[in-house]
Each structure stands twice: as structure tokens, then as C-alpha cells.
Length: 310
Image (tube, rainbow, N blue to C red; front, side, top):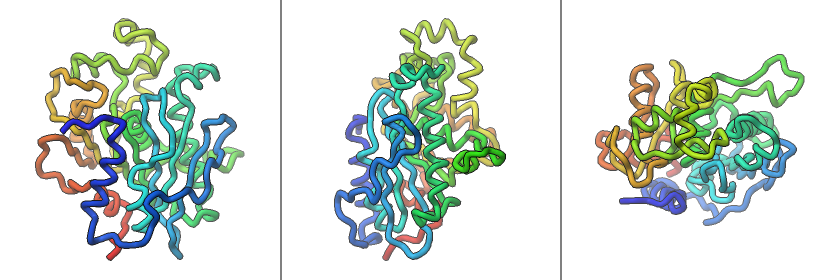
């Protein structure tokens, strides 16, 4: 079944609730309002987040949601798994971040750096609020779709960016995730690698302000230092947290796909690296078999060490 990116969050959320039916029964409004809305974690208008607090006497785990939209659009208003998380005692944070046009206006080079740096800063900010918000900063799961999934994987695989010597207490906080759930994420910004996986791919050059994909291929060597710095594939190393990769398409490495930026080949290419390095993952795609957590939400409960509400 083909899913449009626009319909993905609501359908996945419905599936999660349906698969959890009979297990999760706590009373939570169908469309909860943030406990705190538009909380600034920086100076830019898009450096804001919403916090949804789960009711609990003890510090709660957190789902840290990053929206998609190709780094060109999107907002924090419809985080995945919001209702089942709150019912299960998991607080939710949904962030916005500078998009590529904002980064260009701010003089950030390459522009994608702003999208990723903002995600890291927001995560550190959330950890700095652990006591005030009654959250357990040792149990934070990343979540995102498409470009938001890319950001999530970047956080999951990047070395901890905490600076213990910083005068800024927020910068001293960790950027590590306990686990990550991603929907149709891109996993590389290497044009040669992406073309090998998905021959008709044209996605990625905009991250570096390039006018077209051919320019990306032609200037690949120039951009390789940045590609190594920003591609989740390049950053995978032993000890990285477990991730869940979901795609609504079959795997066919080396073959074109009608929706290249969301092809399961992005997942298959990354999985080859994960196997070599020995990093835990679950890869769920059209035709996949033997997936431990086909309901997706069960993966979050297990990795965050949350017992289903009975």
C-alpha cells in the first residue's frame, strides 16, 4: 500500500492505537493540547517546541519528535504517537527548527547544518528541563518521518555533542538518544551512494544550496567532508542506540522507485552498514518478515522500559 508523506503520521498513529487496543486504556483527550506551547530553545522564531506532560508521580520517559518536510516545510503540530504515549506515561516533545531558507538567510553554510544543530540544541534544552518537567533524561526516544527521520538518525548515530566544560549549562547536556523510531527516512547525503541505491534519486542537493542534482554529483568530492559529517550512514559506530526503520515500499537496491526520497532502499543501504558495525535495528518495509515489533509502538515501550497500561 502506498502512503503519501502527508498522510503518514495520522495513519501510523491510528495503527499504533489500534494495535495497542485492549492494552492502553488511560483517559487522554483525542487531541491533547500542549502542557507548554511554543517554548523557545533559541532566538529564532522557529527554535520553539511544545511539551506534552504525561501524568506520573515519577519522572517520565520522553518521545522527542522532529517533523518532516524535506527541510523546507512542516511544523510541530501533529507529533506521532502523541495519544498512546501520554496514555502509557510517556511525555512528548515536538520541535520546530530552522528550515533551509531560514538557514540561508542566517548565513549558515551548509544550510542543512542549521536543521541538524537545532535538533541537537532542542534535545539538550529538553534535558535541561528534566527536574522542572518531571522527565527522565536517561530515557529519551527520538522520532521523525522523512527529513525529520534523517535528523533523528543523525542524533542517534552522532557522537555525544555535550560539552562538559561549557559555561552554558544547556550545552553541557547530552545529545544521545535511548532509541529512535523513523518513518521513510533518508539515510545518506552522498549523491554517488544515493544514486547507486536509487538510480532515479534527485534528492539531497538542496541541503547544500545546489541548483540541481547533477551539480551535486559533479561537486561530490568538494562536499565529502560535510557528507561525512552529516550523513547518518557515515556516522554509525559501535554502541549506537537501537533504531526502528519503517518504509511503506519494498526493498529493491539498485532499482528506481516512484517516490525516491522515501524508498526503502535508503533503509536497506543503511542496514548493510548496521550489520557490519553490529548496531541494533529493526527494519520494517513492504514484504518484510520476522520483524520483532510489527506494531512499532511496542518497540518504544520496550526500549524506554515502559510497561503497557492494563
